Length: 171
Image (cartoon, rainbow, N blue to C red):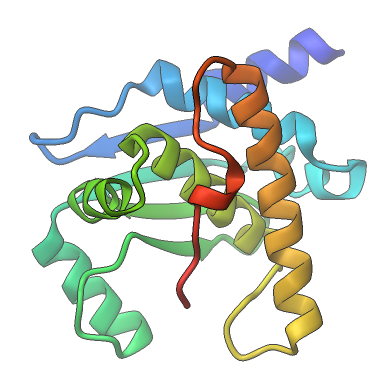
């Protein structure tokens, strides 16, 4: 069962679309996805296991992200990630790699670690976690779970890696 689920989730589930300047490995994203999926509880995993579920990871440039952020959130600036959950599970995560790289430099860690942090963030949004316009306890619950998963990812990667305190979130 676990092998069948892993195969299903990795083979057709993760779709990666990038602009020509992006350098994100689909293999790396699949490893990250399987790691994050395995950190979810049984109820949360159900959101991602339907027959029609697809997770689209789309990488856009700053101009495209600014347009999307303006259209969907009324914020006329580029942002790092936007999420668009699908009604029956999965959905679209739109990343701006240049924004992610800027943030990573500012916080002193690699862009891949920043992307991992934001990927986890997007998955939690799909599951209904929120941090904007909600009570503090809801925001705290989201970031507690996000940080817990990220700490496990950092431990898995080992070596001289940043601690969770070098990550951030600015609503």
